Image (cartoon, rainbow, N blue to C red; front, top):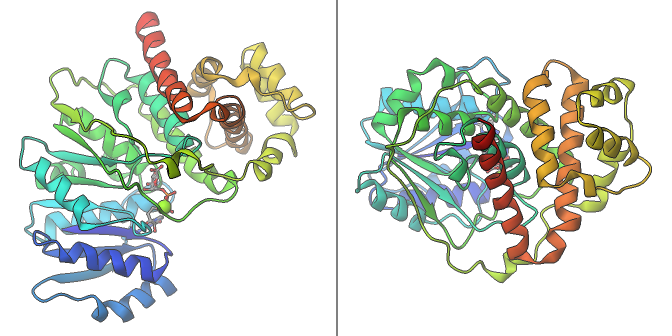
Amino acid sequence: MVCFPFKAENAQVFLKNIKEALAHPRVGEVLGVGYEKNNCFEEIEAKLSGVERKGKKIHLMVQKRWGKKRPGKGDGMNTALDYFVNHTSFDRIHFYDADIVTFSRQWIEKGEKRLEEDYQVVRFFFPKVSTDGMITWNITRCGLAYNWPHTILPLIEQPLGGELILKREMAERLIKDPWVMNYSDWGIDTAYALAFAKYQAPLYEAYIQEGKLHKLYGRLSDLYTMLVECFVVIKESSAMPINTESTLYKKDTVEKIPSSIQEKTAFDVKETIPLLTVNWTEEEMELLNFFPSKIKEGMRSCRNNLDLHFMGPQAWYEVYEVLLEKFDQNKKAWRDLLFRLWIARVLNHTFYYASKGYEYTMKSLEDMVGYFVQRRLKEG
Ligand code: GDX
Ligand code: MG
């Protein structure tokens, strides 16, 4: 079974993806789990007859309320797991975002092949623009490295990726795990990744060279909610014991990155700068006192003078440490400050690394995660 969680997507793109999934001989059913019965839902429903295929089922449903966090993509994915386990007898469930323009049945083929081996979970990864994936790198991968440096978690390429396949047994475990089902928001992808590691599920990461082209962001403020929710799941799970010493884990080796990807910038830099420099509150200023003086001074002075050299990968470690200890998601000033600190890191990366070529930039990100791992192992 193939599931597309969706909220409000371009119907043509989504319908093409449904058609593509149905065309794979192994796929018996496509499930679309919508956020609500909105215009997109109705448009898809009305046009389904145009993509139907004999002998295969298409099922559209609205997500149910499973978690206690903001109702979001997590409720959508958990609704799909419940439907898959309790209302079908398929042995694998695939998840793909509905807005992917480059989706093809070869992705299904590639993942299915690995599940014939001993793997229980397949995650997909893609070549990325060097200024993209800034939540993945700076929040999730750094957080996984900080909390679980001795496991496979810091090695996972795209732990937030919405493209993955699970065997039935894994889906059954997830829906019986109240900790996982509680993440109804953007925290869900991290929650699944942590749960798989906790279950020691054999994992394969499959590389898709064509890349995942999808709806783009404008200003980084579009990512505010995702940033906060992705950090919160890391913070809340800090004490979770995970041991992957004997877990089977492999990933594809990456061939050459297409040059079209090497040259892009993922967001609008000019529009982003004010998010860091204007509208500071007294409360945010106060919270800066928790941070080492270099960070505190750097953040304070960047309102007038945009010098972000202080927020390199190693300084980010010091920031992360304080955030894990002090961050309070119920306080707006903390959420706003987290966002600004992250913007400072993203712009440091964009100004001082991304300008020096693709390979150099990507290596600086890998090195940052490696630094988190090494430092934690040393101090641990
Ligand atoms: N049912 C449901 N409910 N679907 C949703 C909801 C929701 O509340 N919100 C978003 N979706 C769908 C959306 O329509 C799309 O198909 C998919 O979820 C991903 O959302 P999108 O807005 O395209 O997110 P984005 O920024 O492309 O994020 C994806 O990549 C992130 C990452 O790799 O960094 C998405 O897979 C995230 O889960 C992932 O964290
Ligand atoms: Mg998208």
